[in-house]
Length: 256
Image (cartoon, rainbow, N blue to C red; front, side):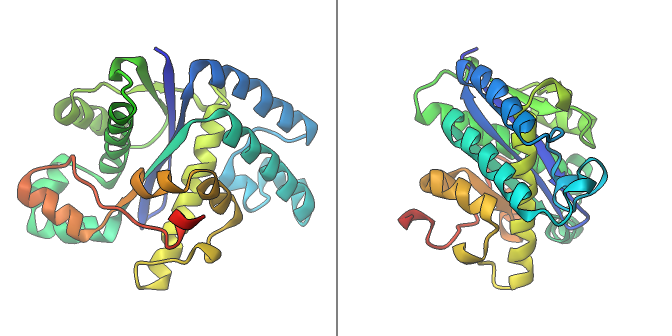
């Protein structure tokens, strides 16, 4: 294997997200060292966005220190920008899934928002490898172990994609912390899109970490980020084609 993709999930009752990064294995080795060096420099525990974002638990003492919080994220995003090659993200809205499932009962029988989002990232990774003339056999995919609905996810990947996902514990690789950061920020962006009500969200209204990632690779954000909305789920059910997924285009991203 020459490349590895690390993927993590985030979500709530409304949206389920998978996201992560790919890099050559030699770059991941440097990433692991540099990421941990940044954490040590800021006297920071491993990054877990659910506690970091709200200054809870291990990050309780960081509450109110926005300079320290912002500086840590900026330094970690710098490691991501230098050491990773590209990124992937997929989301599924639970309400859209439930609505389509009322008309296509097989959807709920064979899939969940979790499995669709996760396996969508597998497909994006495969297509990325094909575009760059990288053999799929040279790309390993690692999912953070402990995610929900793992059994159905594995079955779906094997039956529909001919792929058996591999799993590892989050504390084994610092790369999972980067995937956690991306998944969390992508979840929040999709929440904001839902609140905007028109399916669009201007670039200026995104949170700073997501804007920084998009600025580093604006074209990637258009072709490797996406959401399964109602129309795409209906199309997939009608055509029995779950290798299709819809895109959420972030306005203005190509001009950055």
